[in-house]
Length: 112
Length: 113
Image (tube, rainbow over all chains, first blue to last red; front, side):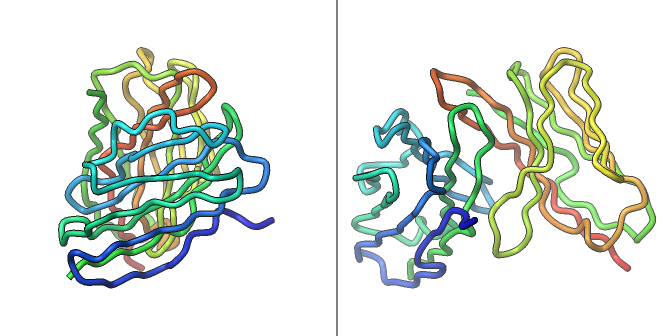
């Protein structure tokens, strides 16, 4: 079975550029989560969706960050404009209701 | 704000030694999960503990949930190099039909052969 698929695996870009991270959840899962992991702050929940609807975006750092889930098989996390402090590993996870979350392998983002 | 503190942050031991990792919070969680993360990969679930005082064993790993469901521990017996990785505890908060995880600060374990 295919797990959670994230793309790209690595992204290096200059500050000010728009960055789009993509996630394909496991088929049949109705919850999707975006996390950010850094050495300083650990693994933080940014936003999660249930049945394609954003439920809690309280972890989104600021207005430069936005996330969408246009359908059950695709989600994006966008940063515009990007800043060096956004450099981190971004993870997507999915789950069925009340079941454990399955994580993708992450996108390592470097903003120069 | 719910916080989960793990200790120690870093641990470097020799193969065959025993170790314990602690996960502490002032908040009560409905359940607590332990994950292991290897470089370049996402966290992988090891176990979920639900009942206060519960003990679960996974081969050489023993997980315990505190009686008050605020803390947990992970004990590894006779550690092996394959146990190397980042260990994360995560408290589960339930809101509606979705499980929201609060992750701990992490313990980076290195087992030297």
